[in-house]
Length: 118
Length: 114
Image (cartoon, rainbow over all chains, first blue to last red):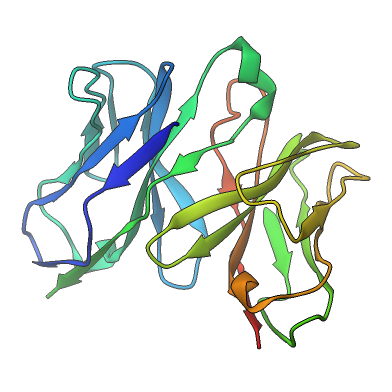
């Protein structure tokens, strides 16, 4: 079945360090890929997305490129801040007419906790 | 706009009790859904709805009921609570159409079943 696998956390970095959180997926169709972020005590928020191969999603200094050949969507940021401390979720959604009405039926990875120290 | 509102924020139940988690949105979103979040397992879809009067099961529907009598509300009912239902529950909504993938989440309900 369709699934998403993320690198395990927690990930602890110093401020201004480079961040990579790995995400790989398995899907029978052509999914859209997403990164969601969950700050402490809050619900998830969409961080960025990519809808087709080679697309790059970006937001708030974070980037991720849809790599169909490696079925990956790794999240990167060049210089993290303390305020980036959160749990990051990779997710996929299959597009297509058959499931058009299923809206946001996302499949999530298990989440990766990031802690940034000053 | 209030967005997606969930109540209560915290709840403790005894095994066998029933309760309803409330979810309301004021954005006229057609799509609404319930997820549960458990450590190391990410979010798993419980039930979803693509419009008033239309609901369907997600990945982990057992022990939960839903209904969608209005566009705004999508309550989740636990008929007979079990310790395995201890979790954090999130309601999420989205428009259908081009923005259907942009789920907006509520702030969650932390449920403990003793």
